[in-house]
Image 1 (cartoon, rainbow, N blue to C red):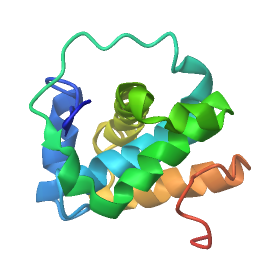
Image 2: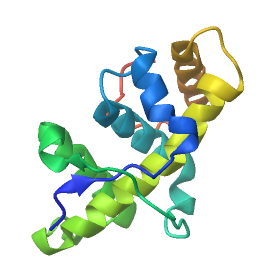
Image 3: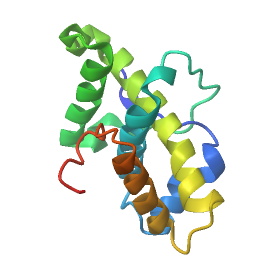
Length: 146
């Protein structure tokens, strides 16, 4: 059983720290949650082929509290099988979440910093608009924001 969720080591230009410092997310945990949702919405087909070289310092799973249900929902939607929710598959669920977060962090880095918006939050809003226009509609947990 895993007790920590690990962001990638040296994730894209420490985007989690930057987003937290810029006031976009109140914590790294919340940033990871959003990044995983983006990764799921845009990069579901890339999940199984993704290899993460190294992971950074983990965030205690207890910090996720009720948000752990989101990790479970991502896994169930990805595998299209409720058996993934079995206790013995907890490590698999956390690893899927970590990979989705890596994929989403790449997008967040691009829209919040590489494209140089006036504010990092503007980049997040642009990303949400792109997701909405693409008709993905698959940004779990963010229904009703559009």
